Image (cartoon, rainbow over all chains, first blue to last red; front, side, top):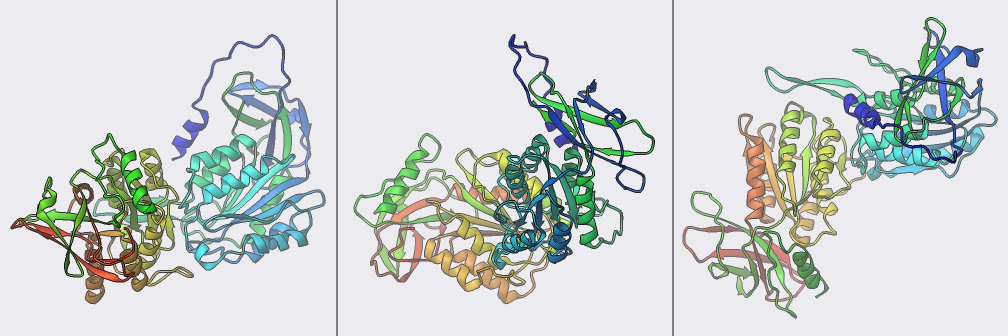
Length: 299
Length: 293
C-alpha cells in the first residue's frame, strides 16, 4: 500500500515546459519543519542557515524563514465509531487538545461516526472549543454503529482547512478501520498532502496476525495507511508500533502532537516551474537530529 | 402507474445489452416476480417461454402480463460477514469478492458492505470495477459479532431507491448473535421488509459455526420465501465458483409480470408452477397486493 501511495504521489515526473515570456508571480511553497533530538524533544534556536531544502533532489534557496512558535489553525478529528475500542472516552482527548491552545490559535473539533460532523466555526478559547466538541462528537447510537468513513472525513477536514491561512494541522484520533468511504485512502491523503496540512495521528490501530490455513497467515495492519498519511504530510503517527504495545493515555500524546506542530520552523521556497508533483526533502546541518516535513507539493 | 412507467424506462435504458425490455400492458397493475427454474438434476434451465409458466395468486391462477427470458442485469448488495469467526477466511473471502467483481457484466451494479463490529455499507452502488475493487481491498476489517438481521435490514434499505430486481447476497458462517446499539432490524423486520418491498435474498454459508438448528431453519426459510437461494461452502470448496454460480443463477432468472387478483393491500401467497414435467420454479412466495414490486 505504501509503495502504491508513494508511486501515486511522485509518479508524475514532468519535463520543464516552455516558459512564458511574461513572468507570473507564484506563491512560495511553505514548508513546516519539525526538528527533534534523540528524545523526541523539539530543538529550538535554529536559523535559516541550519536548513537545506531540496526539490526533486536539487537544492533550493530558502526565501523566508520563521522560527517558532507560530499560531496554529487546528482541527481535532475524533473517530467515535463503534469499532473504536480503547480511546472511547473523548473527554480527556478534547480537554488535552483545548488546554494546548494558546492565544492566537484557532481550532475546532470534528467527529467521525457514519459521517463527518464539524463544530460550528473556528474558535480560539478553550471553553468554546470544549463546548463545540460536545456538538461535534454527539452522534446517535445508530450513527456510531454504521460505517467509519475516515478517509471521507479526513478529506472534509482538509477541505475546510485548506481555505484557512497560517500553519494548519489536523490531529486525528482513529483506529484506522475505514469503511463506507466515497473516496479511497489515496485521494483523501492527497488533499492534505497537496494543501500542506500536517496530519498528526493518535491511533489505537493494531497489527494482528490471522492464520488462514496450515501454511499461511495474514498480517492485518489498520494503521499502515495512517503511518503513511503522517509521513507524507510531515506529521507523527503515535504510538509507534511495537509488539505487545500498551496504548498510552491519550491526553499527553495529544499535548505532544500539538506542541510538535507549534515548535516547527516555517521555510519558504519558490516552486519549480514545471507543472506536476515535486518531491521535497529538508535536512538540518546538525548531528543526531530528526527532521519531519511535508514530502512534496504540486505546482 | 408511476412505478410501471419507471420500470419500463429502466429497462429501456439498458437496451442494446443482452437485457431485453419486457412489454407491460398499459393501464394494468403489474406485479413483477423473478423466477429460477431448475431441472431434476438441479441444473438451471434457460430459454423457456411464457407458455410453460403458471402463476397462482392466493391459490388462484393469475394472468401473466409480462415476460422475459433474456439475461438480466444484477443489482446487488454484497454483505460480507467480518465477525471474529470469519477471520481464518479473510483472504479467501477477499479474493473471491475480487473475482466476483471482476466477473460482473457492464450492466450489473454492486454495493459492498460488511458486518461485524459495525454495519458498514459502501455508499457507492456502481458498475465501476475499480471502485468496487478499492472497497474490497481497503474496507474489510475483521472483528466483532454477527449482527445478521441488522446487516440484512440495512442492506435492503440501501437498495430501497432502486428499480427492478434488488438482491442482497450475504456471505456468512453463522447466525445472528445480536444487534448493534441503536440499529433497527430483527428477524421480523427483515422478513416484513423483504416481503413488502420484494427483495431477493441469497446466502452463501461458509462451513463453520451454525449453532442453533431452529435459527438456521428460520434463516433458510426466509431466503426461500424471497425466491433467493442458499449455497453451502465447505473449507475445501471453491468459493469463487460459488459466487459465479450465484451470479449465473441471477442472470438466468425469468421475469414474470402478472395482474393481481385483488388490490386489497394484504399479503398474498404466490406460487409459480411449471407446466413442463421435470422442471421446478423458485420465486418469492408472497407479496403485498397493491405494491407493484
